[in-house]
Image (tube, rainbow, N blue to C red):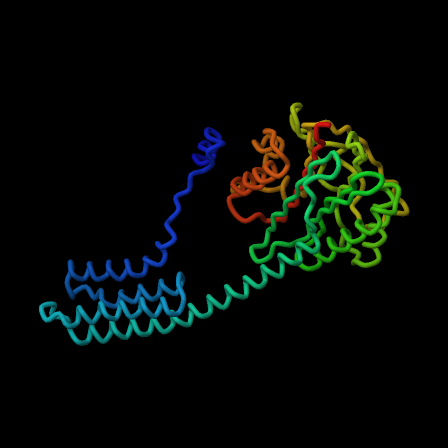
Length: 366
């Protein structure tokens, strides 16, 4: 509660976080060894503090490599040896043997733990690199400008190991105008990625050929119905912006409503209960309804997935999209999406539970 009040009072300053210097984690094991030695000097040998020197190499495995862990273990052993050879300390041989054994044993297993941790970090780096390449193939970069339009896109993954998921977006300039799709594949993991890839591939293939958005939706519907399972579907918004950028036709297939920003305040576009999602095999029995809105300079339209509108904080409260500071303030598309992403992350307070895809389209001043 205090943190939220501070953010509300100083929204432009952000939340001040105390950050440790980069060298602090590496210094921690040596500090722990020093503290144990200091406590031994203060309290004497009767408290059995020497085995606690093993805390140093145990903590080193969490922050450093094998050589660093070995150095910390050696430092702990030297500290133990200095205490053992202090004739005035009256340290028993039994306590010295126990402490040396504890340091040696913990250092050995700390070396193994450090080796496993470094191997997992390398594997994680490889997974992220592959995921990044996959994302660039599936979610191609959106151009900053197409004719009279400025655009920006951003993807926030719910996975800490990969930056690709079932949310999708694509923008295609055609003779009929700029056509785009923003969607969310049902499910998680590889099945969701397959759904998203199928929908985006079909959209890119037919967006240049078909004359209407409804025909494009039918193509995606039939492709999903043919290639995916019965329980898989995609919610999506398809839009076509006229070549002069003055109007936009939208077909909403079970997806969250686009949000138009500007001086009038955030406003949801179209009916809340739109057409059914894609992939349910309803193309032959359903006539998809579209609506048209005017695009004015300074009134961008935000397309997003439900990972944004359904994001919750620790109290279980939904993210207040229309009341957020990011959508209230005017900014260029890229800056606005950056601020919105940061605001959502602060509100949630942890890794988002669902992927978030954002696409912002704005008509420029002629």
